[in-house]
Length: 217
Image (tube, rainbow, N blue to C red; front, side, top):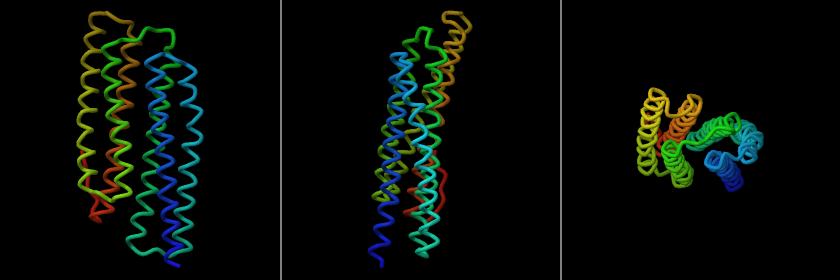
């Protein structure tokens, strides 16, 4: 019986891993769309959101089913709820990737700003690496690694501050059309929120290992 239950838990975790791949691809595609101002790529990000949302529904349904039919013990319950909450975090990351894609569609006729492009691209690269590493720690229950990953969010926060400063200077000097600078602020804000949700993922891992709820970052 326990073997069958362990297989269910493994499948539960596998769903989360599959979802993380889809969400990571959404973020990568959104940033590529921004770099090239490719509306078709941006639309792909929006189209993928239905799949991301369905993952969340499926994981929630499976969580309740496992609890109702298997009567899991405390350790198992922590894993089930950690996966459930992590799926919500991933869904929100996907939503923010969609918001970035929407900026591309909305401002497709405007020129990009190289300096701001470089900052948000670096923010996204850090976020993507954090996301991949955070999901790996779910497999290992490595709380120390999760805390190290969460610390990287400081660099994303710093990137947002850079974008705000440069955009403010551009708006003051009227170097760029106002909506262009403002759209980069919106993109950077979305990336900053993505960093926060990845930090949430790390908190779930720390909880799995230590049984304590800790606020990271």
